[in-house]
Length: 464
Ligand code: C2O
Ligand code: CU
Image 1 (cartoon, rainbow, N blue to C red):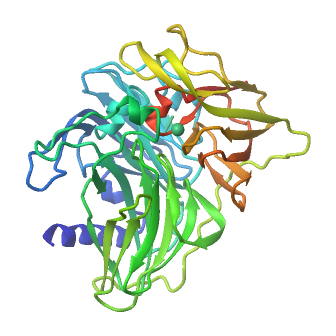
Image 2 (image 1 turned 90 degrees about the vertical axis):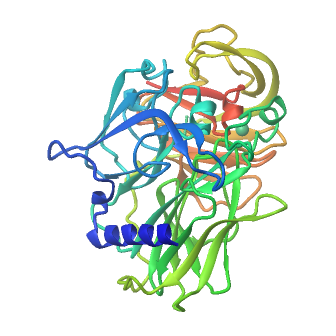
Image 3 (image 1 turned 135 degrees about the horizontal axis):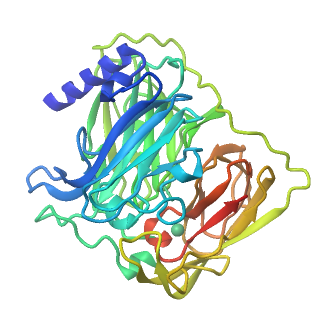
């Protein structure tokens, strides 16, 4: 109760401050760049109340999973200080940034060695909910806690009474010792993945938030889990009306009511929630992706904050470049199962041989320890139409770095075209997406179920 109260006060103070930048106290050495330091090191997470803290890895300081706040159009500078004991990088998931800042070992930068630093510097072109994680030994590093949220604020406050990131992550934990179990098994890697058993939001099991009765709150759901596809519903005794206002950080032209929304690893969903007027009203977000649903986060309507928003605030659209589908080639990608062995060279401190369970266009991990050729080369400035075929009986959240594409159509569901950087392919689904290939470089293109990524469902696209 105490903790919750304190957290509520923090958020209230932030909302009152308007810009929200003060909350995480970034150091500002000069006028232009917002600067942070992220030290990657061993970090303890108190996940289970009566058990020893879990010895994981994380970005030091602040809450279990760090939240950085930046501003659209304002330079951001993040210094990675690697104290992990192995190589790492930071990938800025969903950011349309210059290729050398993308954080992929060997493809865009040398991996940062233990004891070394790397400075990431870029100007976020889009406002919205993004996140960051290593792209080296990803399953072990992200799975054990190296992940955080990057909230890019709109230049002007959009008018919510509160703005709360909800970072969703499961942990594979031995419930006796509180320590990590096996993060991957052949059975999991070759099927839907190895699921965590301790389920958290913002590093806490079923956290409780107090929200202003009658107000409008922005909830930023960020799935940083390495495996699980959640299906999120809003439930409660009192109606808390929730609309999806942005997907993967990009505002929807027409917000739609939250029903039962699938959120795959890497994906983000922003909700605008109208808090019930009744003081004490209780409601919660529930995951309904398994046969035994569970509550993820609890909310209570309180009066401590006087709401100022009178109607659902509207988000300004981001400047995603337009494209012309006319005459653009349709490029097929087949996501399939496969068997064999290959070298994982983008993801480990050492080059190691890994089993192959998955393929993209019949390729998987390279057969020799050198970088594979791009899956496809695009001409800078062309419109690319990708047709993704999921030929497997499993779902795959497919992510493309460096771009926000437009999901156009699916053979399985009605699509109202929207921007995204990760598309959840259902079993046997075929999806068409398109984007203007304006950002040159080598861009990873992979499944964000990390066990699938690290066993073959991964490649890159070159734009020259
Ligand atoms: Cu969050 Cu290569 O991905
Ligand atoms: Cu997958």
